[in-house]
Length: 77
Image (cartoon, rainbow, N blue to C red):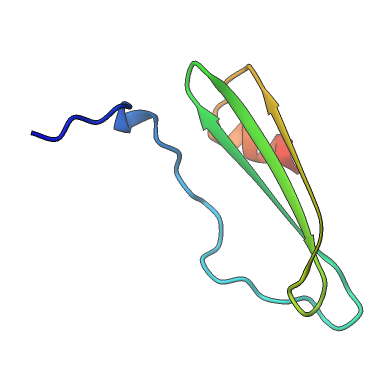
């Protein structure tokens, strides 16, 4: 029998869009996201891309508090 090293109930739910759409020419698009692992903490990220889809900047932050996913997604923004 396969034994998992984590509780599947604690797995994140991906609410991000499945298809990325580029911004108009000469614009930048920011994509914010959050990850919550119950009892361990919350992670936040943002990536900025140009109109060709090339990453321009990225930032991440991890904190030891576990928020509800809807709250974490709001805080990421």
